[in-house]
Image 1 (cartoon, rainbow, N blue to C red):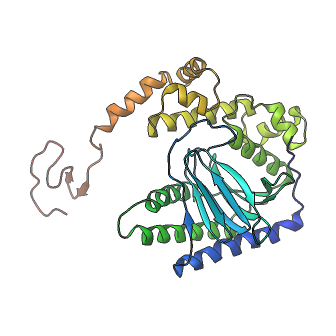
Image 2 (cartoon, rainbow, N blue to C red):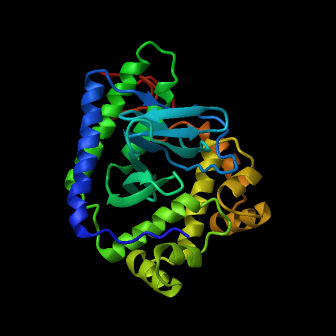
Image 3 (cartoon, one colour):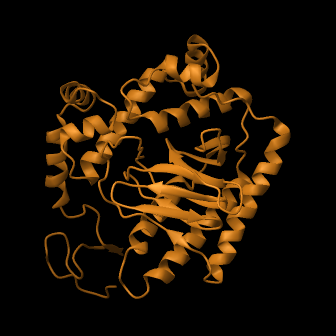
Amino acid sequence: MLHYPERPASQSAKLIEIFRETFRGRQEALKRGMATIKVPQAKRLYERQKDMAYHFKPELFVQTGGATLFRCPEEELLVRDSEICIMPMGVPHHETVENLDTPFENVVVCFYSKTVTVHLARADESMTPRATDIFFYQTPYFSDLVSMLNLCVGLRHSTLPDSKAGLHGVMMGVFSLLLNMIATEDGAASVESQRVYRCQWLIRNHLQDPELSVQWLSDSLGCSSNYLSKLFHDELGEKVTHYIMRIRLDNALFALRDTTLSVKEIALACGFRDPNYFSRVFRQHYDMTPKDYRQTLVNESGRPESEPKLVRGEHEEYHYGFDEENRPIRGNLK
């Protein structure tokens, strides 16, 4: 069982400085065109693979010592010291420590439930990367960072001539936002808040496991299940079990919208052992089955935007010089 002890306050400043130096160093390397960015192909998405995990948001790794061997279903990537890796959302992967010339260490940025986590990982006794110190940031940059990293995944594998320049430019923006975030947000929350954030972090990393429970979480965090349940509810106003179910259903909505996985595959990917139970729970929450929800998205995708393209004076332009009824608009238009 893994335990996550509280971090002494004296360590916070030193760790934040490590994050700052890491992000600034890669930003400068990108400016000089000297940075290496590795991204596995976005294949076999959301498949359950032995000894592999996947997430519903991308992850960012910056190697600061040794190397990480990422094993995916169809390829392996070795990320060396000072190199950057973006793990696309939904890609199953396994991480292995490679010390090479220097001891293993990397800075990892994750995204979950409107929270950005930044942690330092080092090798444990079994030579597996282990998060030793985790900072939690509630930041307005959350959605922007996720979108930018998703864009980087596409640019990295694009064959268009300016893709590399675009990739480096977007990654510089990512590091700028991360630097702003750690400069303006306090990731070192109170002891109680740290425990709740760690609980959310554990849920994120084990959401696909049908055995995920309050008891397992409390054992991992070194506290009683009653204490964790009360603390979680006091901090977030929601029961742990309700939170787990809500996040699983949120991920299911995303998968139904943005993937072609079957309902059964989505149920398993979101931690439901029984697809029929998943469908029943989904219907209880959204008054429609998963299949019906997916069909409504198909129907809505063909509808034109309801808002006008341009409002100028008393005119509303919907179709480049035409109003909502497709009548030509007189006067100056842009």
